[in-house]
Amino acid sequence: MTLALAACGDDSRATDSSDETTSEGETTAGGSTSADDDDDDDDGTTTTGDTTAGPDPSTTTEDPSTTTGDPTTDPSTTGEPLMITALRWNSMKIEDPHFFALGCNLDITDMVNTMLMDAVTMDGDDPPDGSLDLNFVMLFPDPLDVGDAGGDMDLAVADTCLVPLAAPICSLGAGQTNPSAYTNDGSGCLAPDGNHLSYGLSTDPVPGPCFTSDTIASLDISLGDFVLPLRDVEISATYDGDPVAGAVNGIMRGFLTETDAENTTLPDDLPVVGGNSIASLVCKPNDKDDNNGEPGWWFYVTFTANKAKWNG
Image (cartoon, rainbow, N blue to C red):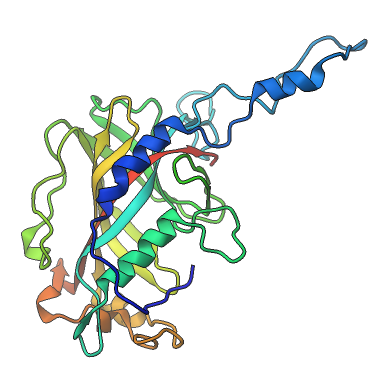
């Protein structure tokens, strides 16, 4: 994915398209193979040797949204891989703060969010490599019971999530994992802090049934040509359905320190903002926050998610 800050897009909420995407994810089984094709290939043949037939690796009866391929094992029992419910983010939008260019006079947040959505929903490589470009995948135990108190989870940044968007097949590869834990609540979860906000994001809590993660120490958000290195990250979202088919009303909150923002420089060949630091883009004085006395900016990102298959 290449960052191109060339024109402004509409500031539509990322969550507007989530319902359709989640619905498709419930009806499309990505990566499944028809057992009928295998039966046709075997017609008219006999075997005279070993008559014990092993499992056919080309067929599966498992739910495409779950797998035993996660690298985490359960040390308290047999060491077998745990079953995983994987929810991949299928929309993202930076709500606060906003990005500016041309002496802090041109709001380019729409353009940044357009690139972010393209990375989440498209294979932008040339030629296409078959994988969506930006892949945040929340990993929960399977089955995921919204009535439980909570448990262990992981926010993975997967190296590959094969298309289609409605039922992707994700693999960690060279990506990163961010182990955490989550707490369920039937009434409400994480609420944005109004002291951090300048651009109209609601301070209402995420509605239940929902979850909130424990704090993740650090998380990098790649925007193609630059990375937002966030600290003290929390994520929260409403479960979509029971059994869970996805997540809606998602919020990720994380802190970008002023030092990190000043040390992250955009490539020189980018139009308008090339060679500038991230700190120069989040330049409105009233947007600056602090975290335990350290200056910087609290970022709020909204998201939705649908089920994926996790290959570990």
